[in-house]
Image 1 (cartoon, one colour):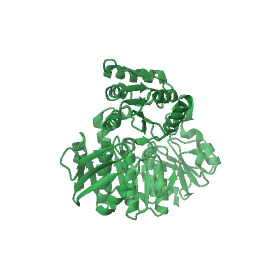
Image 2: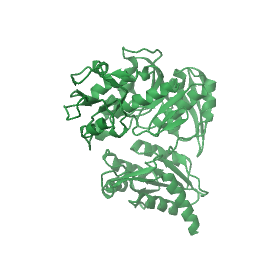
Image 3: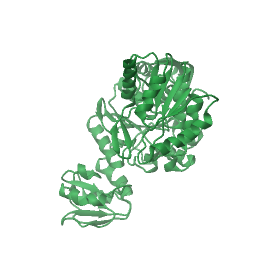
Image 4: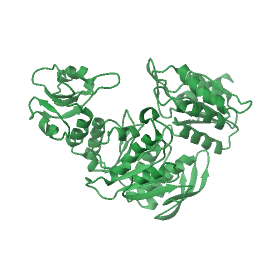
Length: 499
């Protein structure tokens, strides 16, 4: 427990305190629905709501103090901390409030456009096989060993993130493996965390609605690697794990002032992958590194998963895991939900659900499907609303070039008109079509998946791309339940019923 005065002393910026500095604070939250008696309530202004509008409600529920940009009309006795820089104040206050849990566990950060989720899960799987207690923070969920907790952002805000880390420390985690998004790095949501191993998977076009340029995007990613050599560290053994085959690798390497392990397949690397064999349900390859050479068999497939596995091997090696443990752990790792996940419903063609929602990840998923030597590839895909619009025609063109039958549909349209989004995607499809090639536009995603199943013949592969593990669809009218895997199974059963 900390007092208001102790929290204020951590703030580097300007602030004004109205109320008793010795007021004890038992929790911090920016969500008025979660306020508990004794909390400090943070009035964060978002795109749609102003947290200050909920301050009175928070006090009514027991908040003893409020962090705000301006003095509010609140009940007498409510402590108010006023600062023009609320986010900076949180970066200073919150890690201190929780006693810096990110400095007390081994912290492994994974950043990149694609591959973060699978890479974090492989690393965690290896570390657990080595006997460590491991927390995972990422796109799908938070894990404390095998206990699953829901999560709302790839990297939560500083308040939620520090709360998760404190809980992980309390539950005895020795290591935390987390996806670190470019947004989190640019907005410093990871304040107060001391990373020990940082992994760079790749960088391709995404999030330009936020970063504006690829140079800004890579600069945000590079912050994770710069942090490894920050002067205020309390832990030793810092290592950067970098995909040397990626076009932006040099930008990341320039940010590294610690031990570096590169990995790759094409260029000479510290961890060299070779002799790749990729099949529909499994793959294998050799890896040569500081530990010698080893032949790996995996229950996951795709060239992209060879890279993800190499990255995970690098991180595990940096954390002191021996080669024998790494090898046996990789043999027992299975695909992460929605990452090139096979859907089986007794059909004589393959259905794959994949989270690929960027041009590069869609191309890699389609290339992986093509490597399985199918009769035809039918691609069902779309693009999300309220996100980088420039990638829409690019993804459309890739689908036309790499698939035999591209079917453009809706993804998560959010506040945008789904019809308008698919038109922008279709413009790219039309650029990439080969003479006589068939394509379809079906805005309703359920109908698009059913159409793909109707069209499928023996030996085909249907790739349903974009949403992966998600069990919802975000529409202008609200969020509905929607799971690509369920829809694919239902479509197969419906087709069987019609025969």
